[in-house]
Image (cartoon, rainbow, N blue to C red; front, side, top):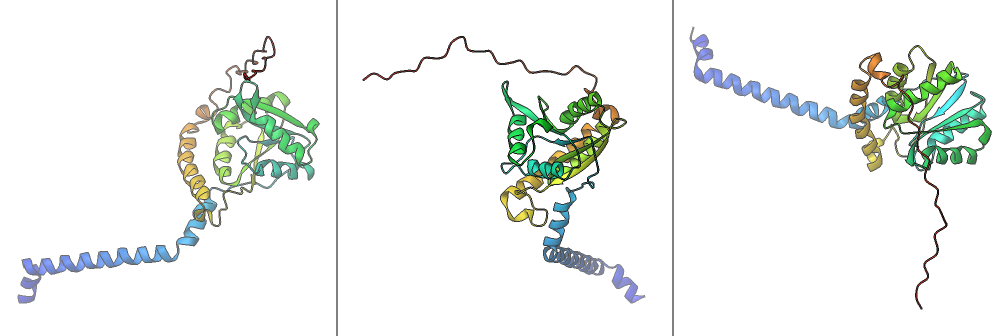
Length: 249
């Protein structure tokens, strides 16, 4: 009876609360220590989460997505696939930088420099503002050309988002295979060690939920597919060559 009364007394409840809090803090500290000790394997798993690719298969075309990096790693991978005979032609998709210039021209140069004949490359400049809009534009082209299977090449960190978008945009159209290109700025095995790797990781972390929202249904994923394409206006030609300015003597 006395023991039960002591446990129910204010002092007993206070001691029990203190012990519970102490155990909670010990558990939390143990979790923090375990996470710290396993930080590199956990960060590696997080970095590899973004990489999700398919095995290459014989296709009608290889699509090189725009916004390649400074080293042209995507173009390098596409040239390798072309030389291996996976597809007879390449589409270089790139957004406009000016009315008279686009990333597609730079990608054409990168591919030719890596041994791809210019006759095998189709430049496709566009006003696409994101990956989904670019996918919609490329599906239009695929349907006009009656392509049944396409290889889409993009950077390793961009493959999971690309695969999610393209499988929905190209639904009931063409078979899409996503192929990863290594990226000199992002190594999934140690991305956290370099500033560019951390930047890429967190940018993708923010972009992926946006892609999920934009493709929450087939209708939203294919939005704009039946709208007329917007073509760029050609730049006006100069009426006369500008005269050089001569500094006074």
